Image (cartoon, rainbow, N blue to C red; front, side):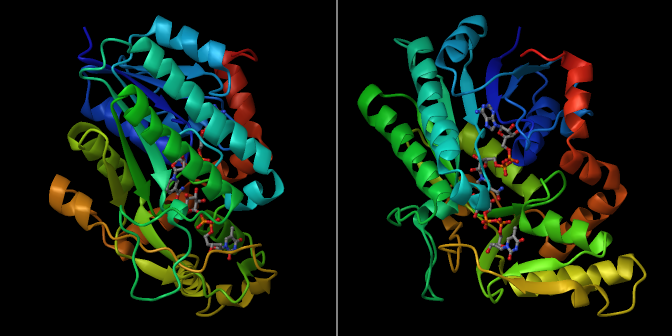
Length: 354
Ligand code: NAD
Ligand code: DAU
């Protein structure tokens, strides 16, 4: 008999797959149900090492489908939810904002409703964990400023507006219906299994293929980078130790200007690909800036470090090496996710229908 039945949404995506792996391996007494729609960003190949584990089940489904969620919560007596499913790419939110409203806002409210109904009268021991982003705080312009848990929300893109809205709904359900919940807001993740639309895997793929490296604007925007496994470790700690109703910022105090991180990638990859020093950097191409491009994100992670005892396990250089080595060793994965062949993998495993 499982001690917990845990629903993880978006578990076939980048961060979700690392969270599923950690929980399936670390908690053999938990039953882990991974619910994912398998959009372009979801890929079950990310989870081949745990797919046969006795405490793991995959369910294909859409969080925008309220009736499906009611049925799922009826089928499993979930004791907790870790909610990662989302549309996650800022550039796509600029061209398709409504998709972000549907999944990130409506999908989250559907999940909240399903949990509230299933847990009515028995909230004790339950937990709804909403995984969010530092982008809800907006853009920093003063170099001395950091995002704190108390920083006012000021989302600037359709993506961050949809995430901010979902955060507000989670807090509103806690206040109004006493739904037990916790939220974390994390900085930019990097590592294996990230879809190559995001900066680092896109640049790695283009360096491998000798294609232009599109740097938006002047490359002066700053992001705060955290290795994805360290984010998954933080999620484990917040899920188990976070205070009910509280928020935790997660980040590695590791800020980089985009142009500097791209130059670093080029340098390391020249060595790994046995190219002449400076060869890959010649691929750098400055392109039109992202509309409304946030200048700087920087997380103050002192609260989670001091209250919950989390800290990043990897130095950045070590994480970058692991990441680059993973993509070099998994060129088939890179080609597969962009060609769409992973969908055939899904269809082979589970058939066409959800
Ligand atoms: P991702 O795009 O790699 O994965 C998202 C997953 O959600 C995919 O597997 C996709 O199939 C699934 N999904 C999308 N729509 C769905 C729907 N309607 N129903 C069910 N499943 C659906 O995203 P990611 O980068 O792993 O981010 C995961 C979460 O973490 C998101 O909520 C994101 O906002 C948050 N986050 C991401 C970062 C980052 O740097 N990537 C940083 C902080 C927070
Ligand atoms: O801060 C957390 C957020 O980090 C998450 O909530 C998002 O889900 C995640 O996508 C990420 O958002 P960013 O917009 O910061 O990530 P992205 O990889 O798209 O871009 C990182 C920076 O690099 C950003 O300043 C834009 C720039 N960029 C991006 C791409 C894809 C380029 O210069 N060229 C590119 O081709």
